[in-house]
Length: 296
Image (cartoon, rainbow, N blue to C red):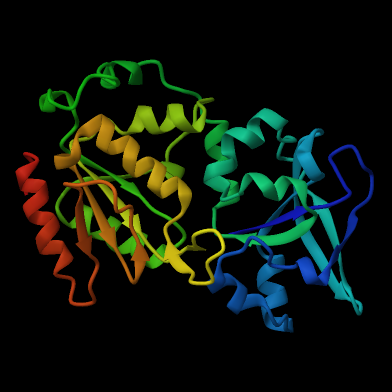
């Protein structure tokens, strides 16, 4: 996890302190994390201070920098945050911020509002992976990146691509399931970026024989002028679901639905599997994987 602080401070400002309105603490933060930190105590303040912080100005024209929070104090209406800059991590350029937006869990409109969010992404791992050089030999392995899915032998049937939202438990359950079958789970934020954009990274690592898409209760939405809100999956999940169907074919993609999540209702023939507590979803995925040619 990490702290995202967008305010009146950037990499070129000498200050090591920033003030954020208390009313904007935990904005753009998932509901589980909000419940965990909404009442700051000595214990969870210590936990938050243990997360790295990414700080930038609105619209991030000067880039962003990484820091460690050293102290948090509360006045009536504000939080005053003191920090020490991490000089071992280079300032992120605006382009690097844009490339990492999806993996960092940042919505585009967040860049236009001062606030303090706590995000689930592993900031340091992502920043380490961005500096990992691309191994030239890897290009041969992905020589068929844009070939049609009908040529199934051109896709790696030792791997399964996993698309997920903010439900870490669901993601880890599916990861463990894939590993139990002797297969390698491909989770995008754990793969090296190698200078690729998000869409290039998805294309590069999705040369697999099967994809599992997790629809979990991460966002809420409703029709315009309606007061009836429904749980929805993250927008990136819906996008990547469609991308995988287009690349691999419907038969090679299954969507796991956990809870009462709204799913796209205008796509016929899409496989949806209920992620039930009895774990019968594993048996259903076994069938789908075998149908896609996996030897499990």
